[in-house]
Structure formats: C-alpha cells, structure tokens
Amino acid sequence: MSFWLVVSAFLVMALSFLLYGFIPSVKRRRDQHAGSVALATGCDDQQQALNVSLFREQQRYLEVQRDAGELVEAEYSELLADAQRRLLEDVKPNENKRSTVVAGTAAQGGQGLLVVAALLLLPVSLFLYQQLGAASDMAIADLLQQSQSQQAAGQQADSAIAEKLHAALKVGTHKSPDNLYYWVLLARLEQERNDLKAAAAAYQSALVVAPDDGSIHAELAQLLFSLAGNTPSEAMQNHASKALAAEPNNASALGLLGIAAFAQQDYRGASTYWQAALQNTAPMSKSAAALRSGISRAKALSGEIASTWSMNLNISLPAPLAAPADATVFIYLREWQGRPMPLVAQRVRVADLPLSLQFDDTMALSPERLPSAIEQIEVVARIAMSGNRQSSSGDLEGRLGPLSVEQIAQPLDLEINSRLP
Image 1 (cartoon, helix red, strand yellow):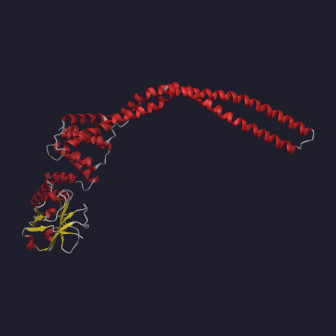
Image 2: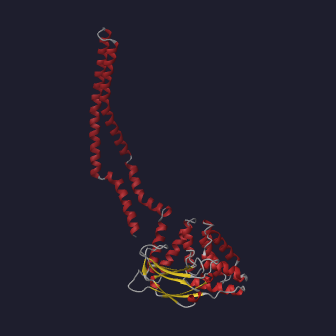
C-alpha cells in the first residue's frame, strides 16, 4: 500500500507541473505579458522603419559627397560600413522580442495538447507499469517478506499469504517466462504444498532458462528421488550427474549418486561418493551422521577392513573467559609439528559448549591422510572472535598435544583457556 501511495504522489506532482500553466491567475499574467510584448513589438516596428529610412538618406548623402569628390572611395566605404553596423544593432533587440512573441504564440497553440497529455498521464502510466513494470516483482517481494517475518517470529505460516504468493508466482512465470527466480520459487513452494509433480515441472522450466545451473539440477534430482518412492531412477542420476559436472562439490548430488551406486551394489563407488559429500556437509548435522553411517556400511559390504580408530573429546570454555553465543568454534586435528592442513575438522557455536565429540577416520578431510595413520596428533579448538577461519589477535584458543595412540584411546578434556595476543 505504501508503494502505491508513493507512486500516486509522484504522478500527482507530474500532473501539477503540466496543469500549472492553466491556473487562472498564472494564465492571466502570461496573457498580460504576451500583450505587453506585442505592444512593444508594434512600437519597435515603427522605430525600425524610421531607422531604415534614415540609413537610406545617409547612404544617398554619402554617394553625393563621393561623386562630388569630397570623399575618396576608401572614406566612402568606411562611413557606409559604419552606418550599416548601427542599423544592424538597432534591428537585434526587435528580432529578440519578435522571437518571444512567436514562442508565446506556439505555447498558446500547444495548450490543448498539454491538457490531453495531463488527462492521459495517470491512467496510461498505471497501465504501462502493470504491464511492463515491476508491479508483480513488488507484490511477490512483499508477500515473501511477510512470510519470512512470520517464520522469524516463530509463527506458523499464514495459509492466506502462501496462497497469494502461489497465485502471484503463477502470474509472474506467465508474464516473465525467462525469470529464473520466479520458477525456482514456484518449484519450492509447490514442494511445500506437496504437489511434487508441479514442482518438477517448475524445475524443468527453470532449466530451460538456465540449463547448466548445478543447484537446480541437484534440487530436481532430489525431487525425482522422492517422486520415485526414494528409489534411484535414470532421470535422477542424469540430473545429479549434470549437477556434479557444474558443481563438483555439490553434496546433494554426491549423496544421490552414492545412493544409486549402493543400489547397484557398487559399494566402493558409494563410499567414494559419500566421503566426498561428507567433506562438503556441516559436520554436526544429521546429514553428516547419516553419511558416516553409510560409509561404514558400504566399506563393510565391500570387504574393506573398517578402521576402529576413534577419539572422544570433551570441549569447554571455563570462566572467566567468555564469548558471544553465536561466535564460531573451529575444532580440528592435525599432525604434530607436521603439515598444517587439518586431518579432521568440525565447526560449532559457543552456544553448543560444553560438548562431547567423537572423531574417526570416516571424518577425514582427505582419504589419503587418515588420523589413524598419524603417530602424534595435536588437537586445537579456537573461538574466532573476528569470524575468520585464520587465527587472529583476540581469538580464544585451547590445545592438546602431542597425543600418542595410547593417549587417544582415553577420553580427553580440552579447555579453551587462552587468548591470542
């Protein structure tokens, strides 16, 4: 509503500029000014005729003097040129005033056109804005903001707003079929409405606009997996492969291709896909736990000897040290006095402390560098006060190490108890 008030205000301002000249007092002053200019122009015309007459008499007098021998030709030419310059100077003011009268006459002749333009401005502007402008964009953005505000406040989504948003997106995709944003929003909304076929159709339309978008291919692959009753299909694998070609670290596509490989009894392939997906999944998430479980099962079925190495770690932030609840805590294992690249890494929040974590080989960032293969390990937990991955002044930190295989076999306690200078 506020948006339309602003639009209306600007249109009223535009109309006021057009109609200002038709206010009676303004029009009367303009007509009086035009009359005075016309009167002055008439007087100037009489003066102009007199100036021309005087110039011609002076020209004849100079010719008589030249013919009588009183003036040489050079003197005659100089005096005549001087008289011509004076005549031209007298003509210029009159020409300027004549231009003013002509302009005033033209303005009066265009008054009717201005009236018609003023009357048509408002309806034509509104019509063009609805047809060609961003009216639908503004409506969709407003509905999305309302929905997000409800979710942020912990309220249940308003079905009326959802229905309006659904209708607005249907209209938006019809008017702007090349708008990728509309198609993806519509597809996700159709999933919320549990209309998976309509969602799949919307994703297909989105891919017409952006055929190489890896995220859209991955979302459609996940949807096709659900439509097939959580069974891998050829279409699902096709879209997952395209997603992986565009985004090699797409965890969703990697997970789906791992499921397809597992269903085909390619357990080594499944383990490889899932390990890659695990590296691009939030370590503390349910998805990460499911991937680790799947990796262990796939390795067992492939006959690969599963590693029994693990580390149990209790992490805490003792008083008087304190940090914002939403600050990030980076926890990682690395080789003692070896390569700085972590073997295993986790990321949590200060609000999660104290907590207990278990590390094992399935969490390794690289399958070529498993924690079980390292003789001595260092454990680091760092609260990034600045939010940077790299350590910086003011960060809070705790360390353990070097840790031997025997020490790792027991639960370990790690306190974040120092501040970096």
